[in-house]
Image (tube, rainbow over all chains, first blue to last red; front, side):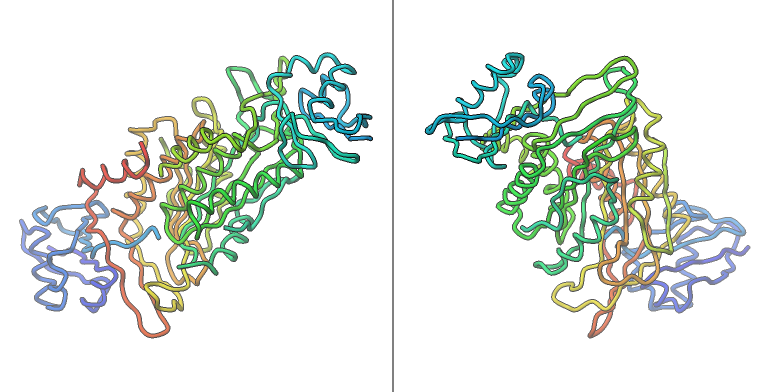
Length: 82
Length: 82
Length: 164
Length: 164
């Protein structure tokens, strides 16, 4: 199945793209998507311990399952509001 | 000497006028001006214990002296700011 | 602290204009202007269950501006790098209109909230301004605090409400 | 609490427009709308001593609006008769421009200050928005809090800062 990976801010720069369509096996989790991203763009690993994620515009945990067509977003620490 | 007496809000209504030129003797205080006002418009006495005063747009005490040409303002309890 | 705008106003109050003027002033100070907190007091449609037709505000204008300056000076003692604007409207106001607008600028948000809250508390305590309520079924003058800017307890209460 | 306006915006933010829309909504609620507190976050000309050329804000827009709604829902648990608006600008901002505008309406002023402060604290903690600073001599991404809306300690801290 396919999911759309979205990266923001510095993570976007490290990933080299804002969006990327990724193929993952059935039963995959957000963590599996992150591992694929880190394989493709190793520089993102610098943020591995400081990343939040969202699936289809809702916060999700790394252990959450993903489904075909999902949008999986990875978020570095935030800095809005000022 | 003459001072201009100014009354505001409900006190203005009780006094029957916003401004009134009052003749007072040399050495008079704000309290003397108030007494003259109360003589002319006894209804203002309802606010006697709840009035602040200002001379020439600065807060003053009832015991402050007044001088020829002063503006003496009497202020009921305030209610601005909301 | 000096004042970007301390005024009694006869026309509708604009938050955008007050904020823009305050920002231009506050950006020159200290770390600059990163935060502006505003408070707008607004005419409610009912008061103690009575339907409001309109309000009329009256002020001792020169004294009110002097009092606003005093409040700005007091705030400067606690928050020397903040900047303050206070605009109070007078005349007839309809439901939904803004009667008072306080804006406080600082480098950081905590200070902007504190200065703004302090200032509106002091305006209510000591500004020589009066509210005349006109209801569907009558009218009344509102009389709150005996204005005494030298009262230390009132000032202390305003500081506490500012969460300092 | 429902939302008069929870939005990611590509154009300059207007306090007057947000306040007017919020007042129209809040006047229908409880004792009506007597108080609106706003907070504007503003681009400062220097940061940690470096001269700022401009900032660029980026957001996960759909998630950000969902987070603003979550913040409004949280605020409603504490202040059920208040109303909240949150507008955050994205794109390039110059010094003096407003990046975020929070407005909180209530019948009385204490509640309006609390809701406004709570909301801006939560925006900073959890909204998926990023600030990219461009200086005269370089640039950097600002990275603050790991966004976790379920973290009870962060929410508790926001409530404390709101002076509840």
